[in-house]
Image (cartoon, rainbow, N blue to C red; front, side, top):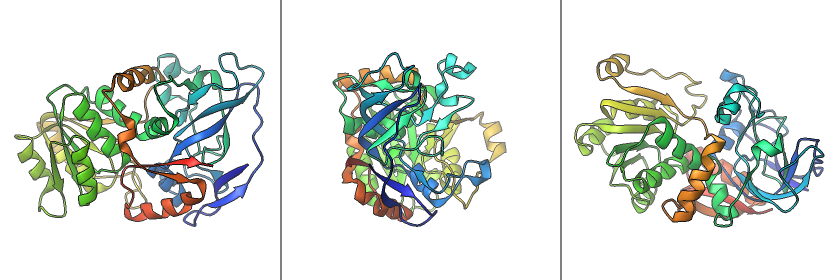
Length: 353
């Protein structure tokens, strides 16, 4: 089968013929129908995350936002069969640790990140294996198409968890979103759909225009104002109730915190690059005196998928609106390169393998 393989960090992925995976007893093999191309793939391709011991090995098949069809199952798999339409979260849990048992598989003690670990080849390929398949494969309702599920698979569900669960978003909240890539645009759409008032912050007018189309009540081009956070506070009548750093650089993280009003909530979604190496200075005195909450958000618990599917089925949420373009596997290397300069608008999704 064909796959896009990371042979050397920073060099274009290679399209190669690789062996078709065979299922181990607890695994399912999923034929990839669609897979998003995420900024986390870009981080992995660059060789980031060595500072937390999570650098992705060379030789890895990337891709962690898949939807597909089960093509084979191991002898111990009980709830899946060939032909099932499934989504697979990027955080593959073991199903047995205390976090998994509490419904928080995104915090699994032995998590294996799909497409970002040698133990879990990813979905930039015609097919890929899934560990503990009974636990990690989520059956898709007929109302959710493969392509929109690929858009949902990492960034959309991460944004939903960040807003609905970590920030406790309420109707009427003023929400600042710093960085309008895939997860940021997802946050804009979700905040608007859930009755909040999103403010989009970015450096590119085309991304801000897309944010307005998705429901942004206001936008800020941070290259055109001296103090972006001050501008957000003005638009938010004194400060945002919730602010998200959807990019992960020092400037957007600090601006996110500085955008908040008293007792506001900052949620960190974006992961850092080699520039920050996981460390960003924050205004601790302001956090203390304004009683700000600071949260991290990583993926989404598996138990929350059904609520998302319900909202999609009702038409409240529409992940397809965030999809920027559909691509072939051959276009993946150039698409990753374009992310150096943040050129993608919305979520690119591979639909031809």
